[in-house]
Length: 219
Image (tube, rainbow, N blue to C red; front, side, top):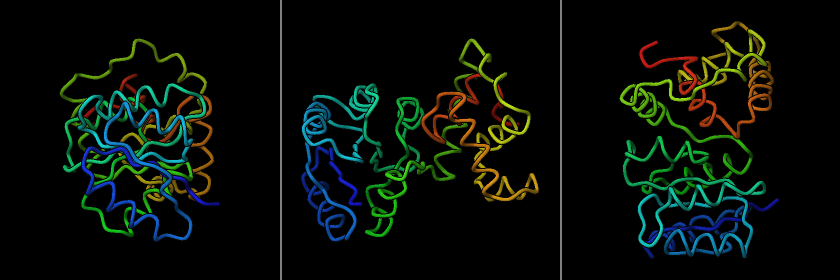
C-alpha cells in the first residue's frame, strides 16, 4: 500500500523539499500541502491522507491547534510534528493533543521516509531526547495532573509493569530484557494496555502514566 501524505508548513522550501524526498520513495506519495494549520485542515478533509507532517509554529493557526482539531475525529490520520529544535517547548502539548511523534526538519531522506512509515504503521516516533524532555516537563508541572487512576484497575499486574517501563522511556526490547520475556510478549501486553485505557499510541501512554501518577519524574 502507498502511504498518502499531506505536508503542512509555512515554509515553501520545506514543503517542496520534503515533497521531492518523499515522492522519490516507491511506497509514499505526497498528495497535498498547505502553508498553515487552517489550510491544512481543509486539505486533510479534502484529501484524507494517512499521515500529516505538521509544522509546530505557523501563522493563522499553529500546528498544536490544528492537531487538536484534526485528531478529534475518529478516522483522523496520523500526525508527525515537524520542528527545528529537538527539545521543542511544545513537545508536551503536542503529544497530549495526540501527535504520534516528532521529526527534526534537518532529517535525512532516509530518516524522513522511515518516520512516515513508522507512524503510518501505527507506531510512535519518540526519540530518547524527546522522552527526556517530556519527563522534564512533567517534573516542572508537578504531576500527577489527572484526577483519577480508575482505569488502571483494569490492567493486570504485568500490563501495569509494562506501562510503567514504557513511561520511563524504555524500548520494547529493553523492557523484554528487563522482564526476561520475549519482545513479542511485551508488544502483546502493551497492545492490551492501549486497548483497555483507550489510548492511541506510545506517546499518549507515556503522558497518561505520568498524569495519573503511575510513575513520577526521578523514579
